[in-house]
Image 1 (cartoon, rainbow, N blue to C red):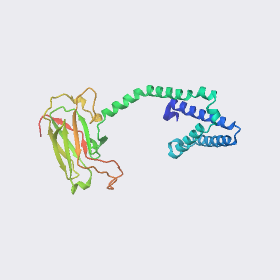
Image 2: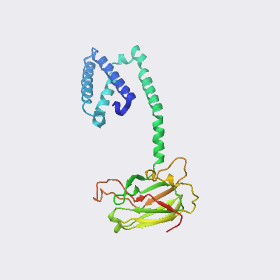
Image 3: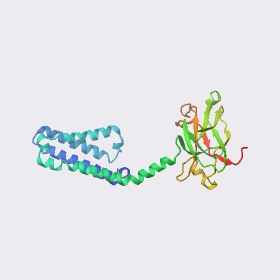
Image 4: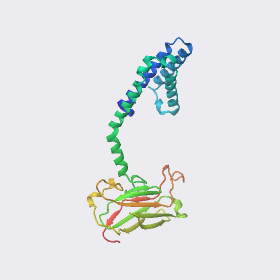
Length: 269
């Protein structure tokens, strides 16, 4: 738990166990046999679950979570009425909400840098695309799209040489259509009817320069970089497929087309 939840998580867990133990001890000291019986059952259940948690990741099992929180709930409500309204209980009733609120505020404050970093990473990654891969036959850098995705490109010239590919054998009889958009303008509409790569040369109508050759690296293909205005290339595929569903592989992802890292030139070939 220390590795996955940190010191605050461990402190909250131990506080929860301590509060449950205090209430169970209170029940065991009652003269009423019913409350003593409830306390004994809770005690044995908590001992069992805590002991077994040292040899098994219990709290990742949903059934165990339900059992654990059921014990905590019973320990919280199975109190004699006199104990609930006693001055001592009323004096400490504010302590648990105060400690919990302070822990939540401290956790949020300490997590803000991580939240900002995660938000920046999410904004940087291309939407609707899987991670960077290397096409096995040639080692070229590419990304698989979903049904629709957006790549951030930084052209160094007004002409883009773009290679597309699908490994779905069903396109031989049932072609797919790929529509390429750039800043709400249709650049091309391509019908793919084979598993061979398709290369298109696309001229940008409103290219004014901007990106430099050193700013286009394979490790950043498709990513949106802060401080730079990208060309947002939208890839729209008529249908997706999964290698696992057609039994051509173990990949269960839904794939549109593979978009290879483009090259740029000043004139159309």
